[in-house]
Length: 283
Ligand SMILES: [Zn+2]
Image 1 (cartoon, rainbow, N blue to C red):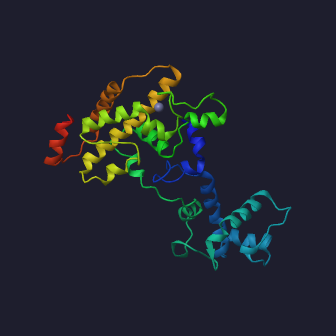
Image 2: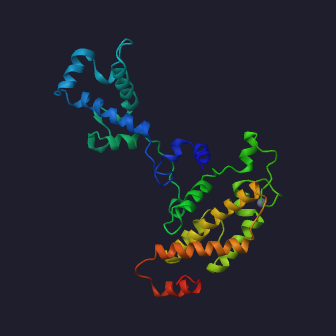
Image 3: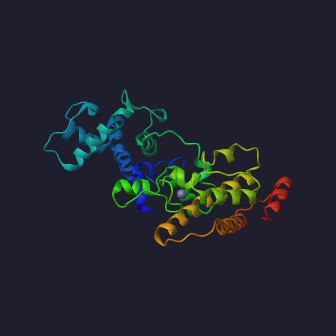
């Protein structure tokens, strides 16, 4: 899994939960912290340290246009490099965001790359699903699992054929959408829930259905569990050359969803939901 994260890159992993894992990007955070010193020099000339900086280093120069001498000490060069990094955030000597007031949090958000928001984040982080299922679904959404299409490019795999069916090139699209094993599993789970579920279009079709939240969450969690079990079976087929029947996996999906739903059961359930839940044997 660590290799999958490396494949995605630290920038993607450190984005917020709408796209990434919400980890703090320490480099940007450090720049934002040092940026506070840059900010003091700009707006707080009465501070003793700022007066010392003016006397020893700036000597009448304009701070935002100042270049440090080559023989200055390490920490001063670092402060000046941070000043150059966040220079774009200053407008006429004021911080351009947050009503002109500099905060570490505000600068950190400004430094982070603004990526296009994705519409699958709610589904991928569905609270009814097990966390390990969420994580695999997140990797599937980013197409970051190390399937054979990538392994061949790395030169660690002789062929790119699907580990399960051995018929088509193993890509994310094939493994989770077109492979016969996946289709059979999704159909069995769909029959249990009384709907068609598919990994194609990644969970958006569920979000658009006119169902209650409870039904949407359970169906989404079931689909995410399917993705997880397909990934496990793919690894079983690759490493141990064995495959469990889709009907048995569908039973395991039901068991997982049943136990997860018992943990996250809402306090109030509508009559309509109770009817549906009893139909799928969850109450
Ligand atoms: Zn296949």
